[in-house]
Length: 84
Image (cartoon, rainbow, N blue to C red; front, side):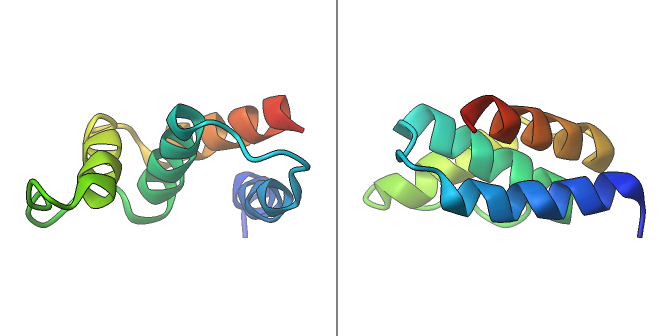
């Protein structure tokens, strides 16, 4: 396991321990960076009009298309560290 993966997994655990819940924009960014870092580019169809939450998550993740997993992991780690 690489050092980056280890730091990424630690950040994923640390984010669960935040004393205050971040705002929706930050949560969407965390979600998108995490998904891009673990799965790569978004796949599947965009959720329907009535699935507001699913659609927002899909769109946030889709904005990171072509971002490497490593860059996404680094971004996720930096964002979590800024929240701690």
